[in-house]
Picture 1: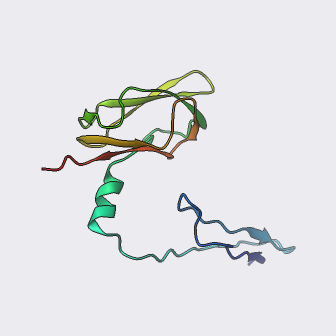
Picture 2: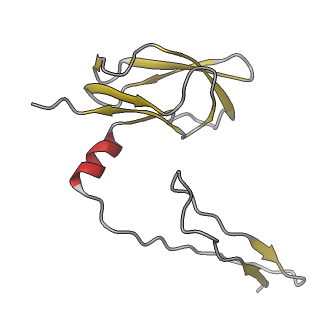
Length: 132
C-alpha cells in the first residue's frame, strides 16, 4: 500500500463550482486510492429547472480539447425547440461542432461569446422554460 498526502482546498468551490485538491505521492511504491465526497444542500426546484436548460457540448466519443465559439445562431430572447442548432464550435483541426437546444424554451443568456475559447463540458448558455 502506497503513501502520500492530499491537500485541503483553500475554498469549497470557485465561481464555476469547481473544487480542487492535490495528491502528492510518497517515496514508497504501492497502490493509493483517493476518494472524495461531495456534500451540498438539496437544490430548489427552480435551480433544478435552470440546470435542465444548460447548453453545453457533450456526448462525443472523445474530448476534442480546446474549442472556439464560431457563431451563435440565436440571440437572447429567441424561442427555440429541443434539438435546434444554437451555436457552432471549431476545434484545432478545423472540425465544426453544432450544439443543440436541450429543450424547448427561450434563450436566456450566453456564458461564452463568439471568439471565446471553451472546453468540452463547459456551460455555454441557458435555455429557460417558456412560462405559461
